[in-house]
Image 1 (cartoon, one colour):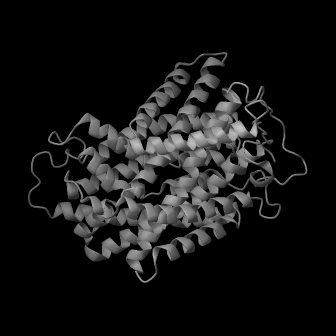
Image 2: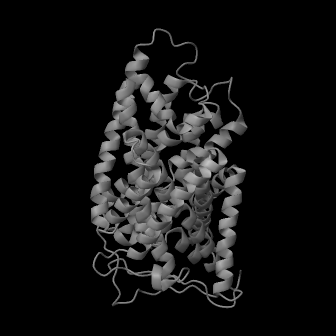
Image 3: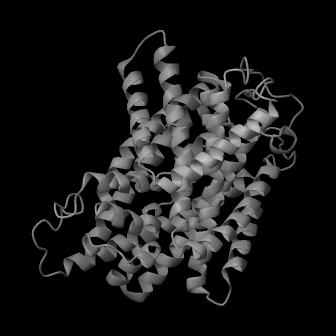
Length: 469
């Protein structure tokens, strides 16, 4: 693919075209990142990780945090070099090759459009537990229409809603932790290793199981990179993107570790029934707080996934805009900003439509496969995400080490370790996720082949706006 484009074009955006609105400060970025990820992030996938890792959920969460922190640093440093809505797509294309940038962007599209889809499906299921009278397909329509409507109102409206959601979810996490403390306090006997077994239980510890569990546990952090897609809508992006990205990963890792450690003190290392893994955390909540806490957690997970879908749709729209502006996707549709709301309206609508159709298809295949489609979809998100993570680490290595006039050891070690760890986790994804991801990538390469008539024409350019615009 060496002939996809012979050079990278970096030019200011057209003076008369509408621009994205720089309305976000550092705090808004952190809040958006936390809502994309969710303060309750490990709750929805707790049962899956527990069964795969033999109960070592907290261990896998901490291992995943190491990889994500290294990658978060690379994202932040590259955002300082290229403050663009295209995020990893731009970083890899600028530092390595436009064709590799396109491949990275295409993999990110898989990640970003699947995330809202999975969240909408989860919300519909949770809503049916509370209001069983409405069917699944009605619920996914309600959620997609509401989330799309909110995102069409502009970045400031989305930011305010995100702040409210984040505060509410944090309060519920505190209530859950308090209930676990009361539960543990009332126990008369703990047994040997009670407080250390969540980290290491010799009876169930297997390295292969830990690696398999970690490949799912990284879902806890998926979405932190969405912060970098907002580079053109944030004040002082060269500083704030780095700080916000690292802070979000660190806060998520600490908070998630506390949540799953508390849950493991209650549940131990025993496996959950295969038909109850999605509601595993709610089952633990029932044990420590009765039916009331069960319903609170169930409703909170609904709200959390709605918030995550809202923020993921926001980020996906910006990624598609960056790729459309760079001509990697049809520019007339994806590279357009609405002059009134100053958002990529077409992209928000497209992501919403995909989430609606995809969530319906997910339910169909869940019945056809006898369950498991939700887990497959979740791991498919990781396929695209980790290709982007490896690409960003590689771009940071090239920019800050190979091309640097002064070689600093940390600019070598951090991106190199981030690349290797992300690559290892990627290889430990499920076989089904790898197959689905490969099909997606093949479709993207086929599209590029047709678009460039066998790679004889230009595929992509990178149009970076001035920071003050």
